[in-house]
Length: 366
Image 1 (cartoon, rainbow, N blue to C red):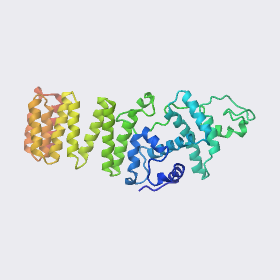
Image 2: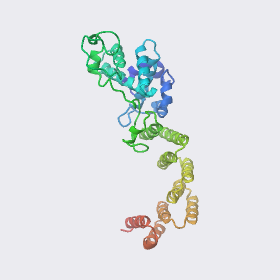
Image 3: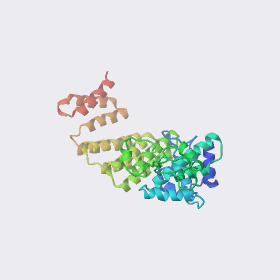
Image 4: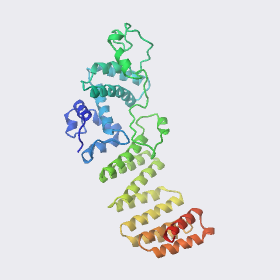
């Protein structure tokens, strides 16, 4: 169970008691989770997790909580200035999510101030900052009308806000994006070309990071569910490369945890059916045999290798994989004999297989 910080308590107060009681369907939050579905699993399983949920320096729960607060504020008739700003930002071409994200940036500034100074949240200053979002303003004299349009003098309205909140005149079309890492589906450069803070690639990448977080927290079931969700989403996207990535992540998970033989076989079969490249198909076929062997089904694994050699007789790397299988099943003498055959056949096999066989043989017979 997590220990609550001052920030947690303040956010729960703003969202209502239902959140503290574990209800993720409180007003505002349910709508946000439709946009960040990858975070819902974290919320549902947060009582399985120790401490604060921080992934690569980002707290994804806090991210959706704050977005939910903004959703609720936009529905509050007493905060008409937020609704006016929202319409203006949308008219500037921002998506609804990005517009909310820019408002959230101002909210976070004043939330941070409230926590640091241990003072009540300054709603009046917050609304003033929101009114100025995206407003291109020339230098305004202290006694001139405030550029926010309130009709009051600048010095008695938004002067202090404009000096404390940075870059109010600028808006970010990617505001509100949640990024928990990169490298599986996205690169640092690529994320800025997607043009949508809710692009599905963010969700795929985030789930990989969430799954790893679950594993580190020893919530194996949570990791399984996150990776399965990625496979489902990748299928819906209809992009074979994304689906292959998602299946490979789930396959690796099955390799690393006991009790996942059947799921591992199903995932590997899906990879086999998806793959057109002969080399990769061969490796997946060997993976299938290795999964069976790790589960104690050595005879079935042996049969998979036999069928592989019959189907792909010229794929020599499969022989190397078979030598590894022999080693793993306690048949070192047979493995060494096969590796020696591969090394001796240098002129007739590919360089990769020959090099791998020689390196392994050197470790077995230094």
